[in-house]
Image 1 (tube, rainbow, N blue to C red):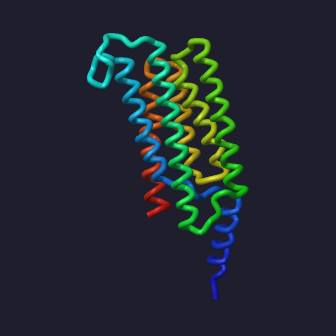
Image 2: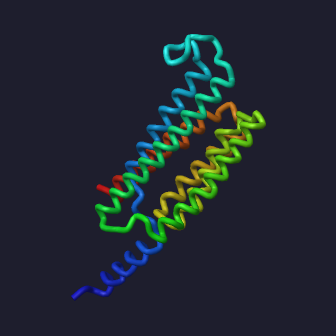
Image 3: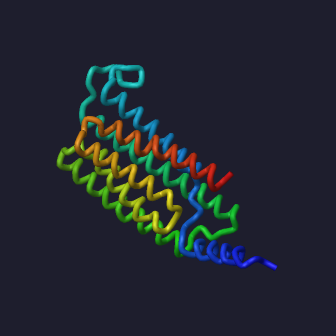
Length: 204
């Protein structure tokens, strides 16, 4: 016969599974951080060292060329990060015998992607107006807001990650010269730290 505290724990776990999306993969966070590091590294060399072996052998790259390359890299990082997160989260759902596409996951997706997509569209508006210095800040701030909103429907640690992104975004907004560094710290360093913590806490 089960003890009352065991029964309460099981009931709590069942309620949590029905209201929260718990299949997020920590490993996907680590990989997303690695993708961001690679993208930031390429951007760094194209902007600051175009004559290096990673550049084009010229003193300065045309701004339109840099813009096109950065856009391609940003989209590639985004697609790889989302694709990896989806694939590994589905794999984790199967491993834990939980439903991946549920009402909880739908609420999570909506809470996350409404701010993220809005931020992406706002970033394109800034690009259209030539406000390149604020792109890094914009992506960090809106992504952070999305994570904070989505944390109500998933692991609580997402909330801390969101505030980290938000703070770095505000720093980048006030000090745009450090925008790329803040972007690499947010999408790279914080994702790797968060992913590693989640992996060892929930998936080992």
